[in-house]
Image (cartoon, rainbow, N blue to C red; front, top):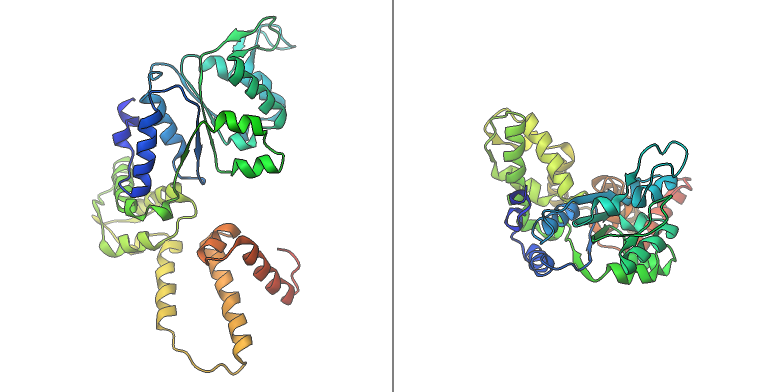
Length: 330
């Protein structure tokens, strides 16, 4: 299992990923708290597991928790556990996440989703290294390394009073920023070939390599879902491909259509618009907004990025056309 999460097994040769590798190697052997930042699908949990299995804690448990998936009523018992008879139905003692990870690593994914009342309790554990299960009379010492991850900007969450400032500084000891796939295009061929090999074996397919034209389409796509989206694209393509070479026809339409649109725009001939310049430009703008939304899977922030405009400007432009069409929802 350790070799599976060795740093050398992490895929990437781009400058952006070399920075990540350097930071991972610098902090792996320490007990420092690490905060992994990045968009959804960038591989935050993968590098967190690599940190654990390349640390002196590798023989201990790696306990991964999604803070966005815990019911409000279960936070305390899940994190701190309970003793037998702590409440009606507690027929046996149950260790919480902290005790499960004792001697190892506790990974708190989506830490920005943690409610404020639990942030206070987490801060106390970080300060005192002790927990008290529900129904217990005494605290119990825990030796746990905390690694947290989020797709949110916690500085902004602090300003909005949704995240405690003191907890933020406790977690932000050693930040590692995971780059989005669009900023590490050099790694797409490596990742695509890796996923092709994986799914070829898993699904017993004959496809061996990726056609150059197919790779050009993969390189051109913006990947709002990052590595996770590329992985899904490759699995679907491998399942559809019947030959030994992955052709463009096997790619999902959202990838294949992108280059078709680009070529159509490049080959379009211009003429003086009968409706006048302003009306013509408005129509072009409306179509580009719709195209960006389609390619971004209706994620407005990603559509704004594709158009290289601010999110505020994008929303303003979208609202303008919604009002013209009589649609007040935006």
